[in-house]
Amino acid sequence: MPVGWYAATDDESKLFEKELRIELIHEHPLFHTPIRVIAHTGGRNNDILCKLVNEKDGYAVVHLTWLMKPEIDVTFPFIEYRGTFQGFVDYAAEDADNA
Image (cartoon, rainbow, N blue to C red; front, side):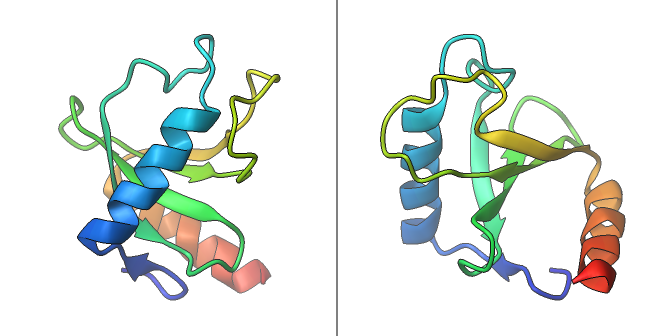
């Protein structure tokens, strides 16, 4: 994983996936997308890395709000990055440089 990112344990994956599913509303782009949380930023900024299960090389960095209920705005939880794994690595490196 890139600097500042941590591979998610099975328990962490379940926790983050549960919160993501709670926050998503029907109109959100990830609502019907099967995902698996594979990494997180260790609470630094509530970002998680999701593997988009039905896409061969599809990943998304999502910023959880931890509202613990459905969001009222379709833009939340915010998708900070969506693309390939290499694109994620580049995104994370740029994000680390700006931190």
